[in-house]
Every structure is written in structure tokens, then in C-alpha cells.
Length: 392
Image (cartoon, rainbow, N blue to C red; front, side, top):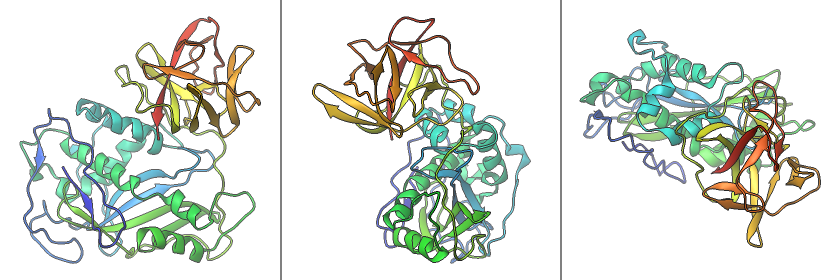
């Protein structure tokens, strides 16, 4: 499965999405000389997206309650809008699946799920419910992902393609960075104009996007594409939005910093892999009780299972590294792990886990749940926990 971005319009290419598990026998049908949706025509709906030919990658900026990292937008979805901006929804009730997590897990997509639990998160329900909604409402309306468009179709194969492509598009649409490069950053005092925001987006994307606001506060951006061929294997060509109108005023647009408590749920998988990189750069500290990924550390250095992971920065120091969150430097003080207290400790790693004084085992009085945060100790308590680094 290989989707790509048309290089002539973007300074980067969408590389091959994560390979689908070999156990999935279904593969998208091969398209020979496919037409470009909205600009061309074809009766082969497996190689020509119709009527939803304007593919829209949509993103959220959830500031309160906040979701996702403080320096990144999050995924809303991938929508097959018509070429005039109208759209269909819930196009195939027989394929309204009730467990996206199980489908992706069965296909070996653990890395994809981990990423989605960070960047495709809900601010008012569980992530699973949010993913089901996006697939059932929008994914079922993509003609090139119909079961008939696969050889040896297996149930859910199109779901794997849908979420892989949506995530891979999001990865090469770094809204936060594009805005920041133009001096547009979250602020409690500054306001911006629609023209400033569109100029920043156009500089990165090549075209304007649809920007939406709630009470003059920027909270959504939609990027439009045409697709040459199928969504699973075709080429995504950036375009200006057609038939979509944003809801932001021309001036006085607020871009609020993320605050409050997010309700995204970190990955909790009994067989989750430990870590995705060495302790350097930016990453999350994910908690493991035995082999079960149970939440992560948030910015104060406490353990949390019902919110968004904090982004930590690991910087080499001597034979180890120091850690810093948005609260400040992190260290061990009076036998507890904390950030922002002015203490800085040189940590180490072993087997992918964080270590202190040579030990990768930390402790808590209980596994946190709901809105409860657990203090992390270096001395023995009721619960043993380890922390693995996931690079971002």
C-alpha cells in the first residue's frame, strides 16, 4: 500500500504508510492510469473517488479541555467531500464497525494505535468512540475503499487503509509549525487576522485551507486534496478548498494555549511494545505495570491514566541525560519524581526503561484512575511501575 503527495505542489512527499500486516490477504486492486478526482472522469469507482472526490484532512486545536501535545494540532478525520463541498454520510451501515481498536490490533497496527492515542483523541468521549464515528460517518463513503475494491477481501481491511492514510497525511501537515514559523503562536493576549493565518498555511501547504473558529477562537483547519487513483494507493494532490466556508472573523482571531484537562485516553495494551526510541529529543514517558501500558507521566511528573501525555525533552549529560517538561527541569527530590521544583537529576536507561541510580523500577501507592494523579517514588510502595520512552 503506497499513497503519495504530488511533489510538484508540496515540498515533501507522503511516503509509504506503515505496512499492513502480512496476515491481511486483502490488497487494493491495481489502478492503471487513474484519473484525478474532481478534474477527471471514470466509471471505475475503485480507482476514481466519486462522488466524494475532494478529500479533506481535518485537524483540531482543542484548548480547553485540551487534547494532544501542547505543540501540535490533533486529527479530526479524513472526509470525502463532493467536488462542490457538499457531502454524504454513513453510506454503508453494514460496515459501521464497533471496535476500530480490535481491527487495527488484529492487523498488527500497534504503532499506529499508539500514535492515534496521542494525536487522534476526543475531548468529550473515548478515543474508540471518536474513531468509530469518523469511520462510520466518513470512511464508509469513500468509493475506492469499498470491499469490492480489494482482492481476497477480509473484513476490516479498508479500515486499516483509512486510518493509516489519515495519519500519514496528518504527519506531513504540521499546522502548529507552519503557524509558528509565521509568528502565529498560542497566546492569551495576542490576536491574529484571517489573512495572516492563510498566508502561513499557504506558505507550507501551497494553497489556502478552510479555517474555523468558535467564539473567534481558532479551533479547526481543513486541508483539501484531489486524489489520483484510490485513497489506499493513489496520489494526493493539494488544492484550494471548494464549496467550504470557514467561520473565523477577518480580524481578532484568538489562538488559545492548551490548558485544562484533556480526556484522551493513553494506550493501554497488554502486549504493547516498550518504547520507540532512545532517550533523546522529545518524547513521552509511558507507564508500564508488568507488560501493560497504563497511562504516562504528565508535565508535573505525576502518573496519570486519563489524560494527555506530556512532552518531555531528554538532553545528554555525562553518561546519562536530563529531563525537562513544560513545568521545568525534572529530578528526584525527597524520594519522589517531579518537574518544576528546581531540581535536575541525571537519569539513565536500561532495556528501554528510565533508570535512577541503576534501577528501572519506580513505585506508587496505587495505580491512578479517573482524575487521580499518582506520585512517583523511588522507594518501595504498593505498586511497581516502569517508564518507557516514546519518541515524538
